Structure formats: C-alpha cells, structure tokens
Image (tube, rainbow, N blue to C red; front, side, top):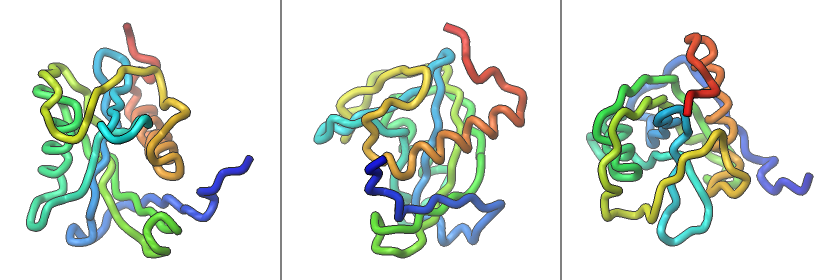
Length: 156
C-alpha cells in the first residue's frame, strides 16, 4: 500500500558476535502501557534505543538509552535477541542490534537530552520514526512475551 520501505528487511538471530551489535532497542512497558518517545526535532514516535558507544557493552547501551530517552529509574530488563536491518535505510548493508524488553517500575523526569516527551499507548502508533523497522521489533517483543506467558493487554 505505497510503503516505500518494502526494500527493508528485518531479520532475527539466536545470537551474533557482540562486536557486530551497533544498536540497542527496548520494547518498554510501564503499568500495562507501551512507552514510546518523541525526538525534539521530530513529530513521530519511536521505541527507546540508540547507538552503542565504542567499547560499551550492548546491555549497558540499552540501560543508558532507556534512561536517557524515558527517564526510567527502576525496571527489569530482559534480552529478547539479535536483530538485523538490511536495506536502503543503511546503504544496503546489514546492521545488527539487540532487542530488549523492559518492564518499568519507576519513571523519573525525562532527562534533558534529545527526547521531547514520552507517551503511554496500548500499541504502536501509526506515525513512527522508523516504520520499516519498529513494527517488526514490536511484534517480535509481543511474541517473546507470549512465549513467556505474560499478559499482553496489561492492566490500567
């Protein structure tokens, strides 16, 4: 349906060489709602996450990004698995990242970095920053939670 991103492929792997992991993305939930953030220079929403710094362990990158982009103070972080993105978005090369799930217990103020605000939703909104990537990651997180027997609907 006019999706310009049909050339983008998202794949999932059991594991990968840790040196290949460039990104950490977190499917984050708080009190039964999904937590998404909006960059101050955009009008679109995204799952928390970002680049791994040189020499940084991927789990540390996930924890840092989760705090920087949502203000999460207390949470349980679970590794879901390795994903890759190949397509025009990254020059046709395959880039690897680690997908996590976070159940946030306590949120502090949003740190004064790149995010303007966060929101709490029942699912992904239509206006995503990365529409060719985040829906696949979100569905993988839902599948992971289903496998673990968690309540997908949440309680308000």
